[in-house]
Length: 416
Ligand SMILES: Cc1cc2nc3c(=O)[nH]c(=O)nc-3n(C[C@H](O)[C@H](O)[C@H](O)COP(=O)(O)OP(=O)(O)OC[C@H]3O[C@@H](n4cnc5c(N)ncnc54)[C@H](O)[C@@H]3O)c2cc1C
Image: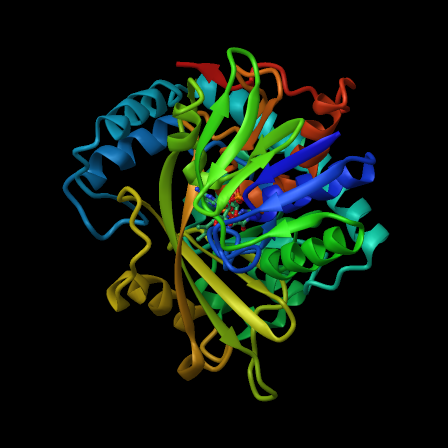
């Protein structure tokens, strides 16, 4: 079958790879000059079943309400006039019950574990080097009550088969010596030995090159603007450079899947949730964190790719805005300086902001669209790197008419 994959972020490229492995003819199309130029560009890089909690939870609802009038939180809300935002916000709020948060968390963890296995299989098959570190993650707490509550909350992860251990400040410093000088400030940490990290951009670009070597046609610098359809099928996708015919189409456009899917009669409840990252080169005299993790009191994540260390933070509801200002990074830089002042070369920091394609239940949208030859693989929110290899396999199996190993029932795109 000739399949056009629309979008070359980590989700589109992994989908193209799985489709090629299944013997399809694949065309991978993106508006940018190369793969992973948008949200897959500089994310935290964590593969973290040990942190796969649903963001929509009773606690999030309270923080969301506070964020309407405060600007100093890790969750920020900017006023939006777009009715699509208010609709999404209501759907998000409806997911914030304890019961739904638990259900969504269990599903997120299960998809993360499946996807991690798939990622390992792709890495073993391709030999891609993307700064992977499989040494576990540390989730740090300064406040003993916060640590005790987190340990209790982690029961849901343990029940789902994820190992999460509470460790003392001394044990945290033994796991990662970067904490030796600051361990007196920590109450302790949760250690998830199965969590890992790697650079999603390096992975995506290397895999796209392998797709091309395997025969995929890569079309970059081409923007999807419309679709030519019959009642039941998409005939061609219309771009700013012409049109593209295929037997099947996969929509993997991250946040931009929603406005384009509307043209196909689909309602994808995705809203951009902005995050910020800072990347520092590591030189000889630096002392970066070795393990990835999260400073839970300041809600910033960090990962080490060997030659660089990355810090990420903030969930900001501010529409389709990619801009960033120095003050957006200030809280995370302050907290990072306290924990690892010698992490990297701060004078050569690269600043970035990206939009997480977030659904109200924080689960991706997977399955067939209203048209029989349209497949959707999008809405990966804050877990697109973690889930990409899993959801790519699931969508490739669905397209082939096979029952996927991980059951995506209920995640199908809904008609408008
Ligand atoms: C700060 C931050 C930290 C994160 N940390 C993590 C983490 O630690 N672990 C994790 O698992 N996930 C993390 N994520 C989430 C992860 O980055 C995303 O879920 C993932 O990158 C989404 O991938 P995607 O391919 O769906 O979207 P994208 O990477 O945005 O790809 C979509 C592609 O579609 C293209 N496109 C859009 N519109 C058009 C059009 N009209 N025509 C043609 N092409 C188009 C774009 O150019 C883009 O290349 C983080 C995200 C952020 C912002």
